[in-house]
Image (cartoon, rainbow, N blue to C red):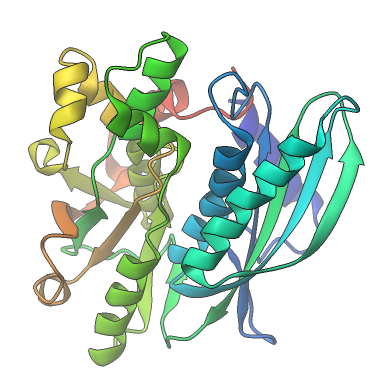
Amino acid sequence: MKELEYLEIINNTLGDSSLLGDDCAFLQEFNIYVTQDTLVENVHFDLDTTTACELGQKAVSVNLSDLASSLAKPMYITISLSLPKNTNTDFVRDFYTGVNAICNEYNVKVAGGDLTGSKEVVVSVCAIGKKIFDVNVSRHYSKPDEVIVVTGTHGDSAGGLRLLSQGRRENDSLIKKHLLPSPKISEAMELAAVLQKEQIKKLAIMDTSDGLGDAIYKLSKGCGYVFDINYENIPVSSELKRTFPEEYKDLVMWGGEDFELLFTVEESIFDKLDKRKFFRIGRVSDKKISDCENQDFGAEFQEKSFKHFGE
């Protein structure tokens, strides 16, 4: 899997890679979180099925999702936009109309960026959020007997993408989930407020942008303990089940781009969360990954995880 190979090279080449590995980097001296995501035409989006306005909204949303998984308050973004020379002015206007809409919704300001030429449309957004809760986040903090929790349904975005790729339009709700994802900022703030009140200082969390299976694998690997998942408890929309009755389970686990949250907390903390927004899907076991003879899940992750390089 090229992405993992590249990441290993980066980590081994840099003199200091201590800020790498989570959805955002926390710059302690400034009390801010920073993240960056890039969308490339014909890799992450197709302009035959995505409007410029939708692209602008999604480019911002995927970065705000990273801030949500850091329990950070979104503050600023910068945008680098690379465009082919024949791009008309309406595309730029529509793109920034989408950017403006999502920024207004979450009270975020555009603080600059860059415009360059390219063969295809490339959007790279850097987002900055402020740490407002005394809770540290990492993929390494899960502990045995904690409850495994997700927000929202999974597989919808992948279902929407599959419909678009097949030229089908019979389920607009799935397509909308793919084209216009919603970052879970309010859920993150609600969770952080409970943790702060209960004086919980550490949280293992990430978003599910690369698929729920990917996130489960990475959180489990981060803490070194096996995650026991009750797959029947994973929230799945009736629209996805109805549209893809034979395929929905695979889309739920490996589809990607749902931009929900996955985290682990003690049972007493989960009891204080709104069960309409937060769903228990399992528990962290006391079994160490290193003691397991069967590594099939790791192999499945390698095979099925959302791939950014079109492998």
